[in-house]
Amino acid sequence: MRLLVTRPQPEGEETAARLRAHGHDALVAPLLRIEPAPDADIGAGPWSGIIMTSRNAARAIERHPRFAELRRLPAFAVGRRTAAAARSAGFSDVQSADGDADDLVRLILARHPAVAGRLLYLAGVDRAADVAGELRNAGLSADTVAIYRAIAAGEFPAAVRTALAACELDGVLHLSRRSAETYLACARRDALLDRALLPKQYCLSAQVAEPLIAAGARNVAVAPRPVETALIELLTP
Image (cartoon, rainbow, N blue to C red; front, side, top):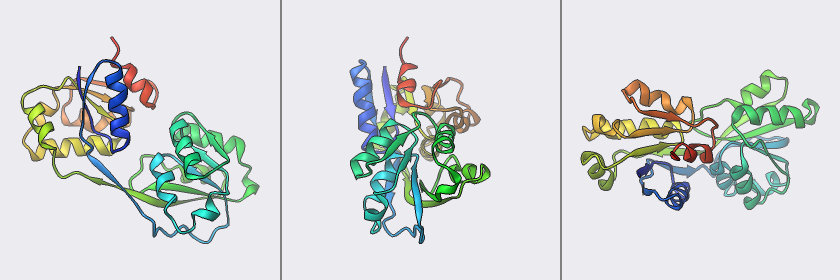
């Protein structure tokens, strides 16, 4: 199968390498560019723990002037790859929920007593889940700080326009709602929406699939679990 991977780099190329290992032809076209916010105001604290739902958070906080004090805190990560990025950045006490945002909230509630103090959620400007809000509703103290932002592409790369116009793609992988929305916006800009919706749309979750279905996509597959391995498993006959 010839597949389009739309996620930001370096994750886009990592996903493409896994697809190629399964015998697929993967075209990488990052539709989002991640920008850290090293000047983000994280507040006075004190903090009792760090929450991360993306590897981008770990990379961004590593550039922050107050990273040295934060790296000593326990960190809660949504999944194994985010946990690995946190450890690579310098966090030594890292726990992974090995799932999605709901799993992360459950992990924190089970492992972090309310009396322990305030938690700091390092998030993106655009986010699908309100982890800090869920924790506050459960009685914990948690604040959100946007430590990175995703900048949407204004148009498709030439190779993607050519592939779509020629109906050469068998599928498109969408790992975030924002990237799916950007895919649709670029398709509309290039008057390629009908052809952009023809390939099978492989989505990490139902939330990711929503804008594609609303736009008219008829061939949509949703991963049974919101992890990349489950998404790639959809490609296996």
